[in-house]
Length: 459
Image (cartoon, rainbow, N blue to C red; front, side, top):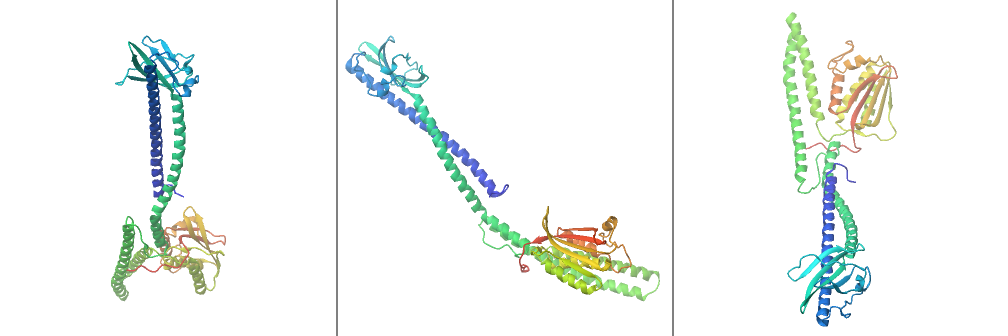
């Protein structure tokens, strides 16, 4: 089908509108030409009858002669719409056809043309529209008016019948042309659909670049997209190298300052030690953010969420042997995560590790697919039977560096990094009260189509 707002639909409706206008105009013009042709034929027929009566009058030399007649039987039928009369110079009837009996047929009032012929359209007493042709003939000292009338209503009826048939035929032609237009529009748009599918394959991780051959009109677009992907990969690689260089460049001076402050005594040494620790934490945090931003900007990656979660549950079971982890997943195959495998491990690993640390021995993990207003999403639910969080604490704990219990080792950056990664991927993170009594974390992430990961982009 032609989707609303698509180029194919626009082309179809534009061509359909122009087609309707062209066919209606063609129908009107054909009907007008046919009407003119019939009227011209009728006029020529009437001229022929006038000439025949003129010849008979000149031959018989007597306008009242019964031998003056026309062979057309329509002139013998009353109310047929076909009449002829001959009047003398004073307008008195001297001869007429049988069909005129009982009818007062007026003379033509129009002026004569260069050939002495007058023509006019009138209605007879029965409502029949007539085309009248009249000619003045001189016989000796007398002049006579020969008038012949033909049935114009029959002509108009033929025109109406032709109009109806013409529009039926043109309507059938229009339907066939509209179907052809729709087919042509769909065929013409197929390269764009293939290009869209190729770009979608890159976004979903099935391909690292836009592949395939395209018409000359859109081939440059495909090349530009590929060039953009290559440029993006190069920029990301340079950013990674710069981040690494910055990390190495800052670690050494900070380590020297920290060592010097520990080797010295006094207030200044304590201040230097405290501030260098803060600087180290900030540098690590911002380097981590830069690393995450660079990594998640790579197009065309996806990961098997089911395998990753199974692996994380096994690892956390070894790290926290005193905690029972229950992993629930649907029987059907799950969609893949549209993103980097290491990012999903970092997001889910942080959340799972926090649940194990704060639980009282029981942690539940559920993995499922969810369809909602934001399309298909991967739903990860992690809940524990620990102390949980109030609504106010749940909002605070997602802030950078905020910790609700300073006794537990850590920097307080774990949840913030998780939240930032989730935001980068366009997902969502919610902290609620679990039915187990502790904290429930609901994580929603974008999904990709099932399949194997694409090869990494060539730099």
